[in-house]
Image (tube, rainbow, N blue to C red):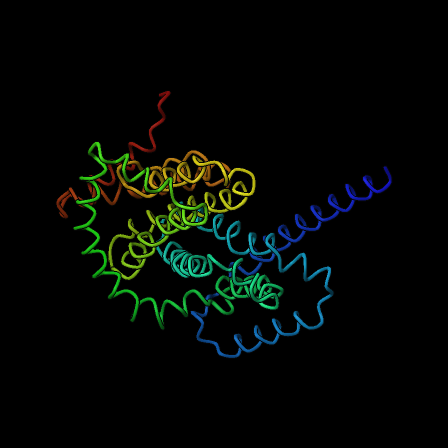
Length: 339
């Protein structure tokens, strides 16, 4: 009985420590949020960050390091904080913050996808597995914080000059294949595709879900962020990544209990497609009805909606009537419905 009570206390203590770490990271992020981003051009900052990383690995107490550089720490830095900041960005009128966080999600998605088999590598090379969370935590932190601004640095030296041209060509090919895929999915042969997916091994089904939710969205997001438009595409994919990242961590947790059930990954795949495709607007629905209320951004979302109404009106109204019509629109918004 004593051993059981001690075990419960240890589990409770671990949970409290994890919660404290997540809260501390969120508070720290808010404190540095207003700092000017460097776009990774300050070499000194990178040197200081690497020194802190090495010192942390060497002198940080094992208990703190195990808690900080853990799944919980990576979850806080790589998902919870970026999702919250992305929701805030998508609800604001300006486009700069949308672009900033979309640059992060592109790098984060590629990194997550290429390290999908990290558990297998860690089993083969225990030393790599022992230090993996340390590297993942500090790498994600390097991408996020404005002092290093790693996501912007990668965008400037790799995403825009090297990756973007391939993505733009890929989008043209995908548009053609997309019509073929839609033709297939709109016929009675859809069950063949579903059957082929179902007979795959569990790990392969998971990989298909992650690939569907990552590859095309990365390509489309890269095209959106490197193309000068009204910013609507940036916001669309920012909303998608906020929703898909939460779906991904939910799948990552639930598969420990439900992964063996044949329909589990099928449900994850259907949900991914629902979030991704414009015809469903699933990410938009989850964003407006779940994420915005939870993050307390409802008022900002309404302001953003009003801004979009104005942009749409400006497109349709001849320039010589802009001032007159927009003034009348402003008066309409100011009217009291009860009067």
